[in-house]
Image 1: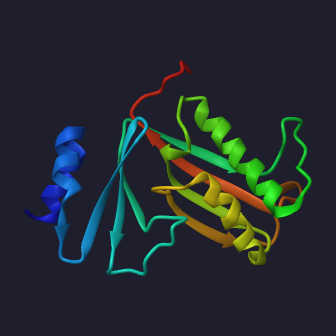
Image 2 (image 1 turned 90 degrees about the vertical axis):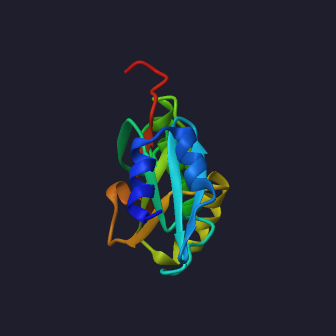
Image 3 (image 1 turned 180 degrees about the vertical axis):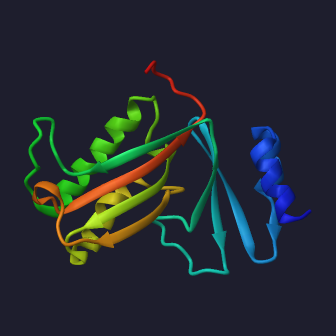
Amino acid sequence: MGNKYIVEHFISGSANASRKLLGNCRYKNDVLRNSITQNTMKKIIATTKAPAATPLFSQAILESSKYRLEISGQIGLDGNGKLVDGGIEAQTKQTLQNVEGIVSELGWTLENLTKVRIYLVDMADYTKVNEVYATKFTKNPPARIAIAVKALPLGALIEIECVAAGDEISKVI
């Protein structure tokens, strides 16, 4: 069974058939792991043909869903529109809470995220960001990139931009 057939079947086939087909599939050195998340089919792609991902992100995500949500960059603003005090850890936590708030408007969770872009003013904060991030993404994390930037809006230390996907929207929009 070739790779083309597997991908076509995954995209056009039923969720149960795709889970059965891809769940135990191994070809050459590539491995596909199942991750059925709330309201979407999300496949974690892991291959030995590229450097391994850390537990905080996946090498790639193959998703099949009806809805795709592009989330604008979020910074650590509280409900009053003020940047939270407490440094990078507090801003990271608030930024992720803001992302959770946005996806919850559709009845989704962070499990629906397929791609995360993290912008940092100081790469020395990378480890601290990962410590907070790890509390939110304990299994099957989205694909992710971290980028150093010169400055962020309102003096923020971190900005997070995301893509989420799902087959259902549980709230009327």
